[in-house]
Length: 161
Length: 161
Image (cartoon, rainbow over all chains, first blue to last red):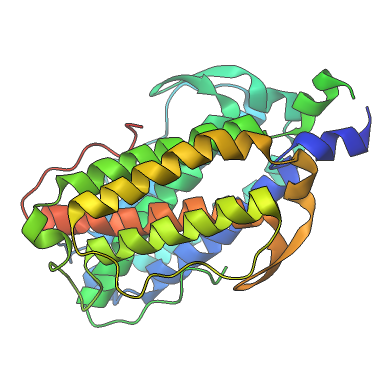
């Protein structure tokens, strides 16, 4: 395999994906942590969910994608219908996933990213699944920014990873 | 160049980037269009900007990135300090960029994505610049979702592209 040829046509390599994903996850962790404990699982706007609920979902989706990429089994996310409504428990789960992603993602065979996978939501290439997890996290984190602003909390800039 | 070797180590190819970027831009266009005309440039939450202002910025940033990728000059975004406060003008600019991206992005030499570029905000690989434009759009569009919900408008699902 010719390494130069490879870099010439990849916009994103597996190593780039890990850097991007973990950078976003570090920022989301700071946004979670910026919420006052008594607002993380209660404050809402527009009839939407509290940010703590969104963040537990983000954790489950990323965990599902990482596990799928690593094991090539894509049954369903491990939804927790009643996750702890506590910031410390959420951050502990977040950090556990961070560690597993740091060791697990680099071991994913790169060929797998271009195979179609039957995900819980439908069939798509594995690379689209991974990007979906990142995109979905950015989407909900952006909503968390509005919640924080409405609570009078100045969030860390979007570009700080 | 070995095409198989290439696909084996790219998470995202230039063709994938175009699909992802334009998919997000189609969704953002629908979110812009979902705003009542009299709220797009006036409604705010948490002391933030109206969504119309964010959308004009998204247009300028994506235009800057596309132009940089195509011409390899990265001076500064073409900020419009006083863009029209009208939905039709915003959507027309959006659609113009869509057409230029469809024809221009496939012509970008793939090697360029892995070269460091001196952007308006600092130096980064061109692929990180392109992804930044997409990520920034998802971030602000997520905020637009909160505005729409707060206005009592049900937005199109995030996963519809």
